[in-house]
Each structure stands twice: as structure tokens, then as C-alpha cells.
Length: 82
Image (tube, rainbow, N blue to C red; front, top):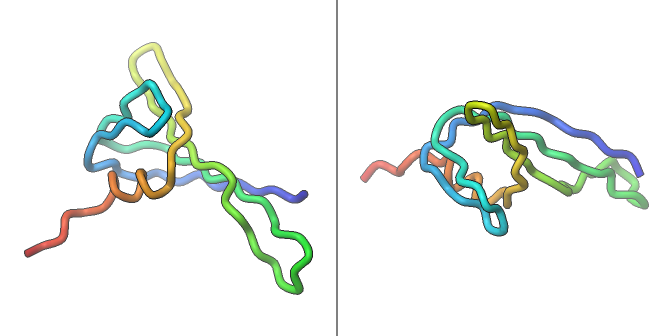
């Protein structure tokens, strides 16, 4: 199965603790890696996300944390203006 990955930098506006992770992702800029696999059997190319991870860096510690894309979207969303 063909796989691909992309790395982006995102700004986390609100610190959050991903479900199932024992680490807090603090507010600030973070590297996010998205891994996808090709959906086979279709007449056109399509990709399905299989993992999203955030790099959390602290003095003396770098750790990749798997996150739910919806949790990450909520933590990076700018507040709506009233």
C-alpha cells in the first residue's frame, strides 16, 4: 500500500491534552506530521489519513504525540468574533 506524509508548522492557540496521551501540548508553534495511505480499488487517486502527530519540544525532551485531527483543529482555531 502506498503511503505519503506531510509536515506542517501550526500555531496551537490553546494548550490541550490529547485523549490517551500523558502529555500536555502547550500553546505555541509545533511541527505536525500527517500520514496518509492510498485508497486502492478506485478509478481515481484518493488518500485516507491514518495518523496525525504533533512534536512537543521541551528542554532536554522531544516527543511525538498522536492526536485526533479534530482536537488539533479546535486547539488551532481562532475565536470567532461576535
